[in-house]
Length: 92
Image (cartoon, rainbow, N blue to C red):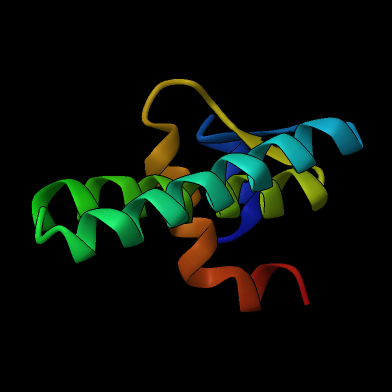
């Protein structure tokens, strides 16, 4: 699956993000990663996973934004996952 396949299927769309939007996603990722580390130390592993997942999601969204794409609202986390998994094929 290519980037254009994802655009045609409506999973992502072209998007010109501002620097502030990219920075905000990264700030959320940093915040959530710090929280996940605390939860891990507290042995709250189920919540640690949830918060760590969001950190990865926000980091991947920031990367997508920087490349000129944005996931659609419906099932956006799936598109971000596809992009994250295949990014070497798409953006190099």
